[in-house]
Image (cartoon, rainbow, N blue to C red; front, side, top):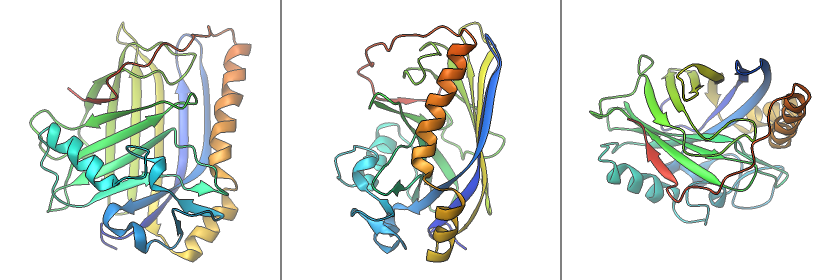
Length: 254
């Protein structure tokens, strides 16, 4: 199966808070891995209602315009030569409901090497921010790469909008592993998050399996977020009011 093929990612999401008090969870999930050049050839509904569907307006500029153009403009602005396929890894709409806490845009060169990963983050307040993850010298991103970015976006009302992220991407063959560690201002790791899974062909059969094996996956994601919030409140973690979003909605690693 080549990198031009649409794929299904099944795996687990893990969150582990270390400071100021410990809290963690893990649950099964599935994502779509969609080459942007192949969106109209997917075995699921495109820009129309269905039990499982994909809408352009849920991603990137969020206005229904070309996702490929949006991503490549970011790459040009940051002088990243990723002239191959761009693959968007995201959750589908389920019965019309969509929520992607984070989706990943794998930007490859003509040799199939990943040159950048766009991490598009959405919070529960309807805001979004994209972290453009690439090496300063623009060499390929691989399993040994460590990429750092200042935290600029408010995600959780129980985490301050300070500190920095550490990104790790391991994508090869049928493996997809992403680890994102949040370090607070003093440098210690405050939160560990990971998405780990296996890729397989995206077919009607594999979609049916995922649909029934992980029911209402997008609703599950938002329910888990609020359930964990209640647990944090019960542990006495301080609630942080949402600050006004910074005007800069796309930032790069350093």
